[in-house]
Length: 141
Image (cartoon, rainbow, N blue to C red; front, side, top):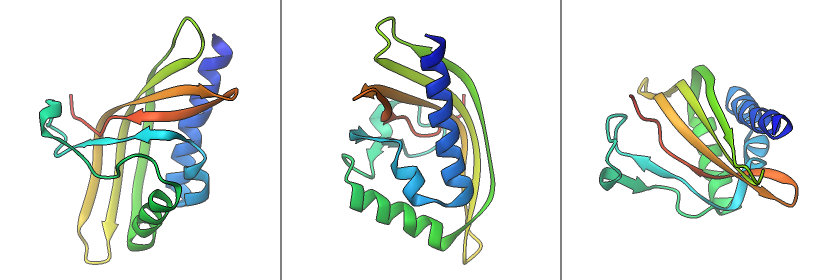
């Protein structure tokens, strides 16, 4: 089980490196082909009745282009992430990580896009490799 936790920690850290370096190719390595990513409208939208589906089901080209657009139009001012918990299923085929996020982007007009709060990243084993299959949006608790 410790090896699985280390693998989950590596994928969380790989995602963080992708944001830090604006490396869209590296970011794309973490996603499961069935990934979905609901977003809360605000960091206080704890009720999923207020969530939206911005990205839809994972599509490599659509997601890659969308993240590249963010990287091309925003400066990353800070990206602090702290893993709070990693839980692996008894079967070793599912896991989640609780991560505190403080990521601040600024567009060319000076508008901030601040991702600040806690997320739950859900992973599944796919051909002996962990992939992110579901992710909550950033919520303040």
